[in-house]
Length: 623
Image 1 (cartoon, rainbow, N blue to C red):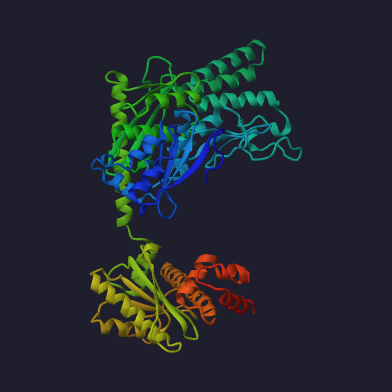
Image 2 (cartoon, rainbow, N blue to C red; image 1 turned 180 degrees about the horizontal axis):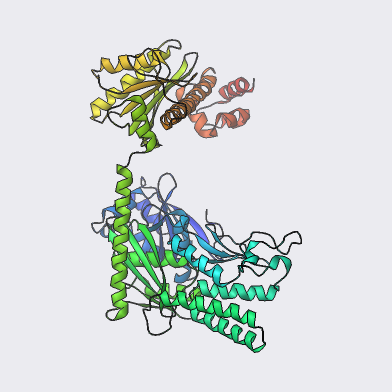
């Protein structure tokens, strides 16, 4: 989990068991060092729920377990109440701790941290490490020697920029491994979009200069590119290579057209970023305005979660670290809506990724303050659009659900469907499953399973009646809504059993159907013949997914129950081993396999098991 830590960093585990006495908790917290580092808090399942950094691990982590720390923050209280283990990593400096924290938060996305949402989906522009490099789009950043620009949240703008780049610079678009004697010139060469590296019509040195110019263009260095093109045009003209000079002239004119369309936001030619943040409930949107050589070349935006109880300084600090962790360029100046936490440490960290010192400003007046307000307005609009899209998605009904409503002639769309299946082997260890699909998707937190009791033999109909009765009886008792559609696995017999169970509970209007496996026939109550649903219909595919998932869930639970019974019965047959000794033996050895492999002496060392009983157990399990 904590692989590839920077050199000189030690990871230490300190277990904090909340069931221990206050004195024990105090004693374990005393182990924390007075050193900078990162701490990871885990819940009872061992899952990381929060990652933080500290100048002093001792004082910072201990502060969580003092009454004053809550300060009315419900989310903070929830975090501390769930902590069962603290893992800390000592670093050499605050800057190293900040960098490590950003990496770990991005990797693990803990529940109580401020984290970027959907950041893995954003593409990068990659300059490949080849003899004749390519410039491609990728969503995977690898340590393969290539150079990466991005990430880009505005994919449409990124592809438009690449399209212009290919017009300006004859960078190859093929994916051949060059040089290769079997590759011939393609249409790109004929239309003037490639200089033919496949047939060595351009040298490696000149092609790499072309790539360098293209990268300058992509990173916003338009004036540098213009100066290079102008110099190349003049050199070709002086050498009487007029056709070549004309090519540079056309590229220069095209570049000037692109540059003139970009908004000038500064009279000087400095590079800087401006960051604005808008918040709503537990979500925020961070907008980054990228200014290169005084011109606005792009706008990136990211959504953050977990900001409900965070201060403005905390949100800005978290966004800075998460954004610049993967950004391909860090400017010398960054303008912000408010000063972040640990501004000095963040500046030091950014300086290590930039060329020279990085200064964080909070503009109060002038053009930059005006641009900041515009960026904040953009962030608010993007956040509202995201919320509205999410609400619209919830309101929209999937086509498969609408098709099912049509094919079954239902009054309402079956947005919540529950499917039931029975699993047993000749009546032994019978169990049932209930799986739930909401808007055509599995909702696993609503899955349920049941042990069937009081039924002799393999009476599937009686078993179905029992599970339907138990399921709907509980829904009635708890006042929960019934599903829009109930699907039972089987034909007319299983469907009739389900209808009988519903009527016994005075439930008359619950939509219910049966799906028979053999011919994928759908049965409705009161109809002797199956419904005529086209085999290609999306509704039938949805029903098949439900049926298959309920079967899978029932079978997996049945195997678990049968395995547990078989394991227990094997030990129970040994005289002198009751429920308590069986539990002690399994807890001691961890599994039946290890118990079988244990020697008589090892079994005899278990508490409550003497030499004679150990011999009987070893003999019985060894047979």
